Length: 214
Image (cartoon, rainbow, N blue to C red):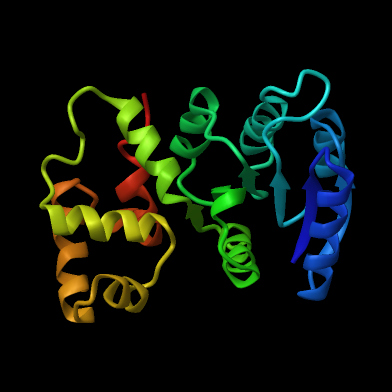
């Protein structure tokens, strides 16, 4: 897995580099601002980028704006935002477009190294890794009427677990139910959200991202 890192904090950037190298990832570039990130992606065409939100010069949303450019111009490159904040203005656009190859994790809520690496690999492979807090904030922002009102409370629990990237077995363990029950809930979610089998493997992601557009 070839990775580009964009993080303005030198200590954190070097820490992520060492962490990924210990996991047999090839860090092809490690940069400190949005412009350098775009140049690195153009030069190296990595499998995935790890992007901080607030970088020079204004330390507001440079990272997310660069991430949106990557999503538009380099669709094959996964983008994992790793931030202390949920920047709602751009996050919904980032997550609500192409349903695969995107992640948004909050630094303070990444519990361990394995969780981070697992999320990174999912994004690099075309999947999603979304922090539940990110999903919650964007859903509140997206519409005044709850877009998930058609789902039962248990189906909503399953949907959020799906968005976190959990497998059926992982959802069953988290919700203390059988895998058969999880499969039934997921089928109902697809049906209620009008996601047909022709949507293929992205249905799990689309089930959440469908309602994140503003």
